[in-house]
Figure 1: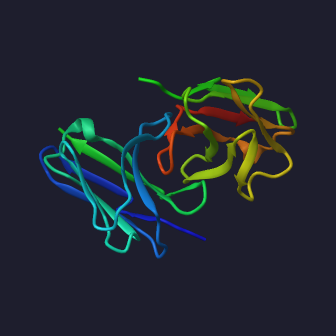
Figure 2: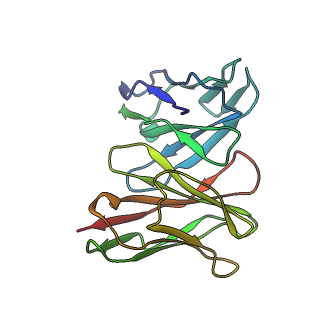
Length: 110
Length: 112
């Protein structure tokens, strides 16, 4: 069974601080997606990484896929209150389904 | 921007009743999915659908569940006889190509 563990589970920081969220597995994934989910809504796709070692930037967000394709990280620079939300990683393997982590609930205080 | 649309946003039903959750995937997508998220838990895969048939299903997707694409636009999830533990957010997703799935806003199912 493929599992994705996200850490930390909760993170509360002040506006302007930097943070990193981790997504780890003992399994290899062919791709990793990062989603953001607001309460009562569906996950919204932020980025997909598919190559080991790949780094993608989305404004102040930097996503990295581990060399062995078993882990990923999301780094946010100079966090803003608008970054508050639940960040989910989801792995794609050889099958159709996505395997989700439990998420990191980020709160950025003004 | 095209999006996956789900209706209703909230469905309340009595235990043992049948419910149908509806989804309109993004129009040029060919692969469709249902996931569920019990409150406070992970998003879990239920079923994938391609070319008018189920391509993969999880152990959650038992005989009480069925999916259908009755016309060229809708994709439905039916639960035949709902149980209390079916209460969850149900998300529909669709994809244009491998590894990128786009999710709807979800239907909150409350079984009383």
